[in-house]
Every structure is written in structure tokens, then in C-alpha cells.
Length: 352
Image 1: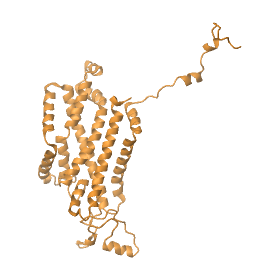
Image 2 (image 1 turned 180 degrees about the horizontal axis):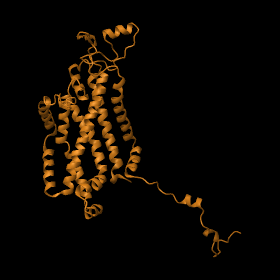
Image 3 (image 1 turned 90 degrees about the vertical axis):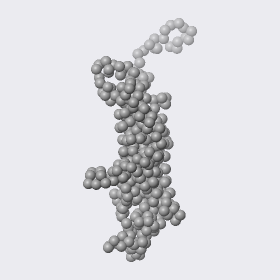
């Protein structure tokens, strides 16, 4: 029966218990998530950062995979004949040109792998040298960033947690390093360490790395950790007054354990962002040091040394300078855009 809308009687049908299907429809539980999962979801929504990440991954994979099956090596002089005689026809080849013997083989019906970027003044395939140079620049950038990360975490954590005179001394050292002219100090240290380490690495496990690359790592360990240390110290100062840190102290936990288990994990967003932005800075520093002749040891190439070598024939072979310059710009730009995306994704202040 249809109920009179003016009736004061209670509608009994409104008090029937809900079925399981109705409860499931009405109650929608949010899926459990974590800090990294939320950050990764926000990062995936950033199209610019994701495109930059794809570019970086493709560059890294290309620098690792291509040398495995490329028929030329970065140090092979193609014009060297038996008896160490040099064929000048292989020197300074333009893209997709061939030397005399290669052209003769092509005329005979053989297949010869092309020189995509031509050859340099020493008759070496320029494409594989650019690929190896990209690998060296990326490797130096990543390892230098790891060194900066470790030193910055240790120094910043100690200064921020223990405070007092120790913090005062450490921060005055940081201020002194900040006051030094970076470019001048890097060039001076690179020149001094190159001479100092040159003869002492012979016969050691570090000889294959080279004195120049080792001096680059020492420079980063001496000068470039201060920014990371300041950021970590600021985070530790703001977190060490929290209740969970006081609770850990009350239970007798030591300072090192509190830093490892509580303070650093809660500072991970700042650490990730700073490390991501440190990598392009390290790559750029290695590139301009190699451009000045203070980078990797010859014949091993890097993007900076390739650009420096191209200056000798810039009027005739300008593309040899443009190619490594584009590679450096693409890598640094992609890493910077990815770092900005990581900052937007993992910074709690920007979460909505």
C-alpha cells in the first residue's frame, strides 16, 4: 500500500538491515599505500619528468649495449696497416664515408659497416667514441654523486644531531668551503692531483681508472659535499625534537641508531631530490674539466674531451663539436627535469 505523505507513522521498510552487497557498495576502502608508492604515482602523472626518465634510460642502455656489437672500438685506428703504416685516407672522414681499402672492399662486393659520424683526425670511428664518452661522463657523474651523498649524509647527520661545538666547527668549515671560488679551486686541484697521482698509480688496481678520473673523485669529495650536508643538517635539526626521537632516547637508544632508523628515513625525500640534482652538476663539471684537458686520460674519451679535440678542425668539421655538445645538453637537461619531477613528487609540502 502507498503510504500517505502526511502520515506520522514510521516507515518500517527503512529500518531493514542492509545486505552484504549493499554494504560493499556503500563502504569503499582506500587502498593502503606507502610514501614511495604515492611519490611514484605522482611522478608518473608528470609527463615531462617521465619523458626525461625515458631519455636517460635510453641513453644509459645505448652506452652499455652498443659497444658490445659495434665492429669498431673507441681506440682502434682504422688506417693503421700491417707494419704500423698509417693510411691517411681514414683520417677526418665525413659521415658515411669510407677509406681507400674499405671502398675497394665495397667495390668487390663486400659489406662494410658505415662510419655514422665519420672518423676523427686519428682515423678512429667517431660514433663509438661519442658512445664511450657518454658512458664515461655518466659513470663519473653517478659515482661522484654517490661520494657526495655519503660524505654529506655523514657530516650533516653528525652536525645536526649532536649540535653544540661540533656543529659550530663543522658549519664554519662548510662556510669556508662555500667562500672558495669553485671553478678556480677545481682547476687548481685537478692540475695538482694530476701531477701528484700520475706516477703513484702504476702497478696498482687504480691504474686502469687513471689519475685524472681519480682526481675528479677527490675533488668532489673535498668540495661538493657541502650542499648535501647543509640540507641533511637542516632536516635533522627539524626532526630531532619529534616525540618518536624523544621516545627512542628514553629507551636508551644511541645517537647512531636514532640517525639510521628514524632521522635519515624521514629525510629521504630531501636526499633523493638533492642526489638527483647533483648528478647533472657532476657531469657538467667533468665535461668542462675534460674540455680543459684535466679530465679522463687519453685515449679514453669523454664528451668534454671530444669537444676539446674538435676545436682543432672546427672550421672544416664543426659537427664534431656539435655532437658532444648536444649529448651533454640532452643529458644535463633530462636529469634536471627529472630532478624537478622528483622534487614535486616526493616533497611532502607539495602533496595535495
